[in-house]
Image 1: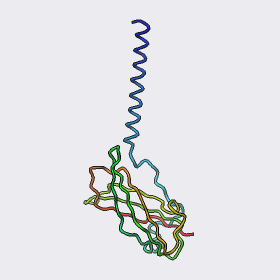
Image 2: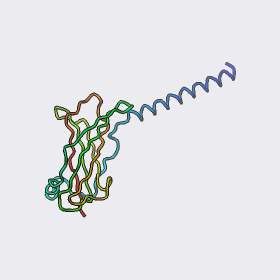
Image 3: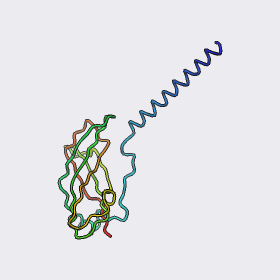
Image 4: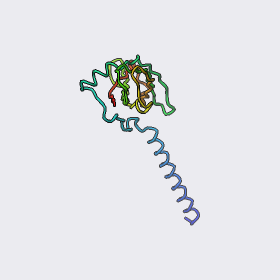
Length: 159
């Protein structure tokens, strides 16, 4: 084998290995699970189990959620949950954390997401005011049929 043939063989091998590595990286990124992102939490919030939380949560009026499903180019399903939350607590709401849950007809959980709505979408919610909430649940199996979409309050903060 002469030097020119050996150099071509080495170059071809390097290109093939590089192409395989890049292809593997792309496949890993596309197939990465949606649940790898850390769930945001509302610091200093009242939570379920606290008497005050239950009393104030009942005074936050949520419209029935509307779910809109769309497909991603990678084959995954994204479901956007929308509702309107009205503050009937009599206090300024400085923090609102909500959870969106998708279930099928048997009650099995298909997807879930927790998001901090206030102060992320707006600074605060005055008594009597309302806010439009948009929460996106990613990574839903495209073959699964969700029959129930639920939004619930998981954390509250007043100052």
